[in-house]
Length: 153
Image (tube, rainbow, N blue to C red; front, side):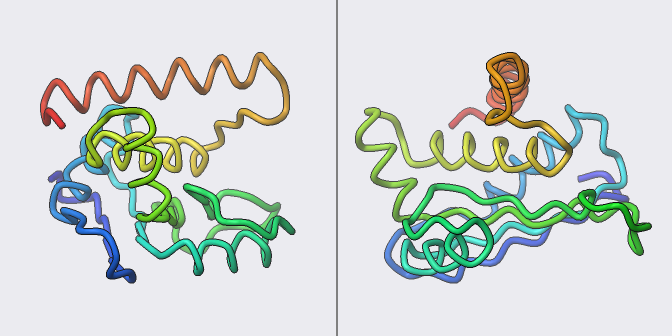
């Protein structure tokens, strides 16, 4: 890990076994590949119940989701901590279900969700237009390839 990057991982759920050390490495490689040398972020692993509460509270959607991203770059004010990108919240339960449904390993799904969340933190979107979705999906695949080249799932 480069000295300036700081990645905090917090596993707040007990239903799914998650390799938090690996997730930290994935986040570090993703930030490196995106050119963020001094970035800081937190990754929170939660249950479906908790992510449903967050989704309802912040987005008005009363259902669980796979990943939420809370960017510190949004809004018009000056950032107190310029290196702090924000928080990525992942439902480990939903990740496990999606991995099983897609026939992939849990690590692959968690990697995808983490990178997806990080891209949201730095401004990528996929809900505004088809063009935005194409750009974000392309970047997501590119970062995944780079990460998996150095840290196979």
